[in-house]
Image 1 (tube, rainbow, N blue to C red):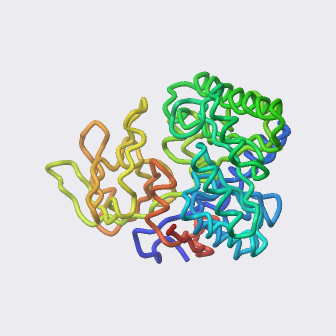
Image 2: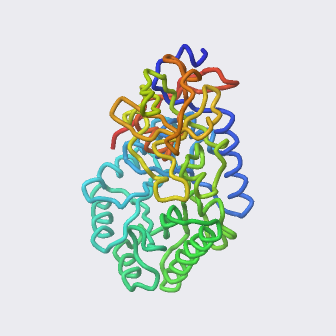
Length: 372
């Protein structure tokens, strides 16, 4: 099928770019002696995940138990649930273990650790668990040097498998050197905590780090056993703004149709509003604000200085970044445009399927899923 035969808005996935992005990250991580554990929260798709992996059964990272169950049902067995485990979810995770999944959980408090150990024991299983480390003050976790680390380990007992962290502060960096510094702090934090646990007699076989910026620019993974990263499969405008990728590496886009003009305002109206693009404005704090997305022609090439400047539920407003004049004859009603997303995860979450492109034509439709 050609793009003219596809109803818009639609989520397009460039197969060649996807394969290239996945191969590049695998080579990068493996060449530095670590295991790649892709985060599938962005993809939420079996076909995409298989391209990202070396082995059919994993390892993978998930952010919902719905993801864990879905991927287990499709043959994936080695699964890290990388969100703090709520007590009410332990039984559900234990159910996967009983079915043969190798599911690991994470906690960052004595209370959470005790609830995991208690819930898993009640279910008659062992739920391997990692202690989340706060390596940059970004979100959750135990800070290096905090005595709570050993207290959490004690509460986990034989369930303890290691430590993990997410360097979310890397998304706030303005330069590559800053990302490298965040990556170094990320690695140093988990390695130091792993050493502290081992010195106290605890098992710490897993030392896990992960974010696409730090995975890309880390100078070393010494002491790290695995790297978790997800958006690299597709990339997006936030990653491009950080210097992690080029615009030409972004593998997903939203197909939109021109539905009208507001000539006095220099606006092009499309049928792709925030229900298709999401409301994510992740580039607003970067050097270049990309609005709600960079506008491309039907072949995926960016057009001059056009961005989606405003977004209503079902309407996208396309204009020049400087508000200048537009040659409306180039964009007649019914013509097709593509929009590169600010945040691949948020934009993809608006859609139930990918229209897969090979050679500019749609050759496949791959299902996405949602829910928790």
